[in-house]
Amino acid sequence: MKTYLVTGAAGFIGANFLKYILKLHTDIKVIVLDCLTYAGNLGTIKEDINDSRVIFIKGDIKDNDLVKKIFDDYHIDYVVNFAAESHVDRSIENPQLFLETNILGTQNILENAKKSWMNGQDKNGYPLYREGVKFLQISTDEVYGSLSKDYNEAIDLKLENEDLKNIAKDRKLQTYGETFFTEKTSLDPRSPYSSSKAGSDFVILAYAETYKLPVNITRCSNNYGPYHFPEKLIPLMIKNVLEGKTLPVYGDGKNVRDWLYVEDHCKAIDIVLRNGALGEVYNVGGFNEEQNIEIVKLVIDTIKKLVEENAEYRKVLKTEIENINYDLISYVQDRLGHDRRYAIDPTKIATELGWFPETNFENGIKKTIVWYLENQEWCNEVASGDYQKYYDKMYGENI
Ligand code: NAD
Ligand code: TDX
Image (cartoon, rainbow, N blue to C red; front, top):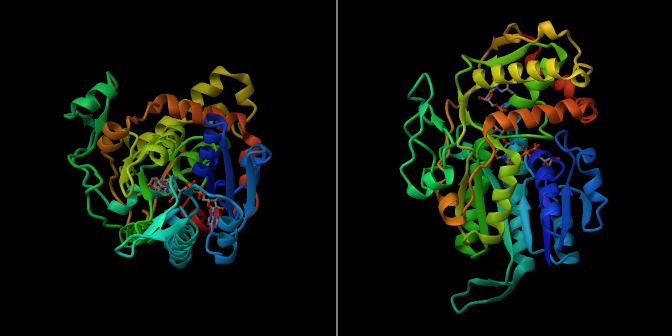
């Protein structure tokens, strides 16, 4: 039986991961550590923490005494570190918080894992560790910086690797550029958020090199799916369309992101945790590049179709159906230092570990929107509290 310490599991990806592993593995124990910032919502995982296999601890990953006690009290085999400040716009407002949580918090867990797992030394003085333990960091493609966008319109993506061709089968893939992030791409972060994530990646790699701590890092592209906090592009656009509110699109709306369905990501994380080669980094991408403006239009079109087809969904609308159209779009001031394009090359994880993003975007976005339509209680809950203040501050003067 494996005991997981999952940090940040009251947030978007962590919660999806918790649900995923509880369904997939019967013989596990999960300690959840989350300090419940604005992005953490206990309601998201209320059924999961009632599961006899799960223990929830409210606390901060920076708290040395607490993290030490968790390692003392439980026989932790795996750490999966999701806990982070994760929103780029907020990092522009308050960089220090991002450095503290994302770098120092991560280092605190690493240090406690090292002390708890160490059971000797080799002849060169390197620590030796208990069999079967691992620290997995959930990092991001943003640490690689920004790629050039070489085409105004998407072109077909031609795969050269035979294994990838076999896995992708007849799925139609597209790209806006000639280059992609691989695990060998140099880190070149450009926002306070991405620099804090790059900082934590460097600290982890230093622990792997200097202390031989068993680690993996996954660097994924933009996730989307259920339980996504409505400050990020897709859930914010869904929320605003349903309320008939303006849709704020930064700059020219032509920045490109590579969208990954969150459940596909969770599957990749569990595979890396169990089968990833120690010390390795794995990129996890959606094979799904799209410009922001196209995403926003797709959200509008999909919601319109769903509410036209289903009277129950129409009850969720706080506006008339006729108002659901592209007139809702408003181009607003660009994000400072806005990265132009992200695109992941997932060849390594696909060929070495057999993972491939299974969900195509049209299905994924439909599933996501249906989830929001059917879970308005959750949306209202997370958007209470400070959410409105944040929204007014971020967008108030622009739209
Ligand atoms: P999120 O903001 O939705 O959730 C973060 C969670 O961490 C929240 O539950 C919050 O309460 C908790 N947390 C924050 N600070 C903490 C602290 N000091 N101690 C304990 N808990 C704390 O984030 P997310 O979108 O689920 O992202 C999870 C991880 O994945 C992050 O590390 C992020 O950098 C990375 N990531 C996210 C995406 C994405 O598209 N969302 C893409 C790439 C990488
Ligand atoms: O209101 C908006 N209007 C808009 O045009 C918002 C919130 C975003 N955008 C644009 C900015 C980006 O080009 O949409 C794109 C996506 O923005 P976000 O959802 O904020 O995501 P991004 O900045 O790409 O970062 C996300 O993916 C990588 C996550 O928030 C990070 O945690 C992750 O590391």
